[in-house]
Length: 242
Image 1 (cartoon, rainbow, N blue to C red):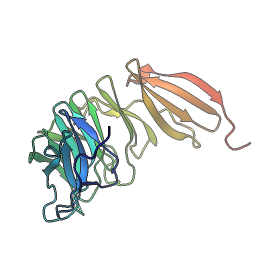
Image 2 (tube, one colour; image 1 turned 60 degrees about the horizontal axis):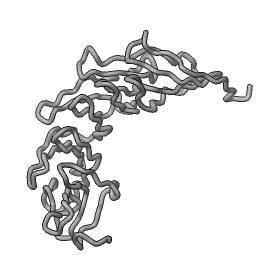
Image 3 (cartoon, rainbow, N blue to C red; image 1 turned 120 degrees about the vertical axis):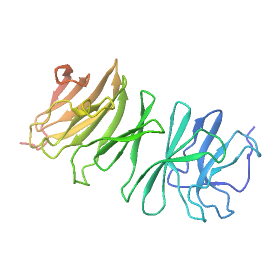
Image 4 (cartoon, rainbow, N blue to C red; image 1 turned 90 degrees about the vertical axis):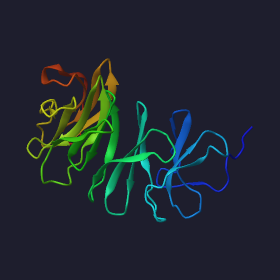
């Protein structure tokens, strides 16, 4: 049968349908109406075990936790205090939620697990953390705040994404978590009418992505090196009816 676990807790934030499983419990953004606001909750399926993990914005404001991501024995989420955006980590213990990184004003987005680390982005910056040490790997286009990174996908201990460095346009990038290992894979799009690459996922240790220019739609695979980036299918297109 189906029964209500605990009355009075409303799922909240823009991820109101998001439940994440971690350490034999589920975690979600909830509001019990007692004044704490929209905060991080956990449930083990019992009344007593459905409770707030931490008031991440004390004083009745809504922290609105979102982007729940599990990496090993850690649960990460992102909140806002109305101005800054904050990355949090919890081991699932009630009351144990730790600030990992605060980014002034700008959003934290695209939390992605790879090789037991958490990658995330803010504007066109790529960051990495193990929950203790948090490092900006690279600012792809310094001083520019509109060229977001897209398509974060972990394949074979590498992170793939698309980025615009201000010189080559939006291209496929790869990172192994180091500065030297974070680079543009290849300048694939040299057509002024080209769309930027769209990442679909991984296949046999390689990333699969799609491009389209004024005359051809192409499906590619890449191992993160220019020499290992090849077209596996293509189709003629006539996008502009010329």
